[in-house]
Length: 270
Image (cartoon, rainbow, N blue to C red; front, side, top):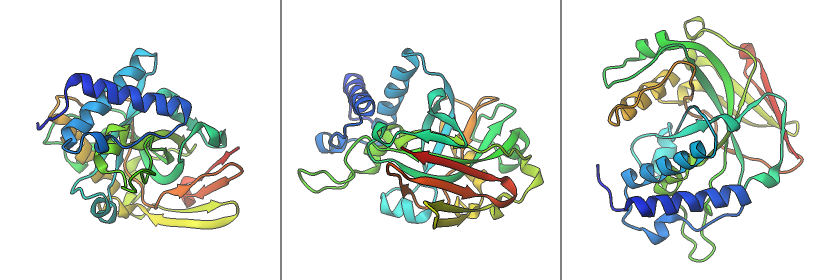
């Protein structure tokens, strides 16, 4: 590991992100003050933020994987995906009404969720292992909401991947569909979805856009966590990565996402 931030600095950064989340007030990017920070620093800050949530009574229910497309990795100047932690208060059912004012810059992404039935751990885990360990595939929307300015109003600099990773990979919520299918029952690469915003089709996508196969996102996560001696537990939800671009959410917006045989997810912002 390569670290430049102290444990105390990571705790202070985590506290700053939490204040921004609670007040829905954006902050300056962390890399502005720590230009030499590394990915290991960013994940250390994320770990401190998760620790704050658990100490406050939240429960870890899974993980999200982001930056799974080559285009997004290139834009963020990174050569691998990133990940964050899902907490119980982030999970919502289809049909939920959310308050836009509770978020800073909310956006929706179209994904598939893997609900695990068995533990996964180690660098030797394969795609077949992930399929065997998955109890259900569920359609899902991820609500992302970075707590730092997308573009800093002071210097015009765009936040970096280090900033978003430190910010729990900008994860703010998950809307789960009601349909559950076994992973062996469908061709995951060919799952497709149509996102409609206020009656207008805004995004379409095919799940093969996630590392050629959403299963590969879960494989990557298991391998990445193995270096910390951490595994994925039965019952956990894993968001495998978006196969559409993020769509901005505003008060009054209504969303309908049609996954064909996997059903429809709806949500609105008020």
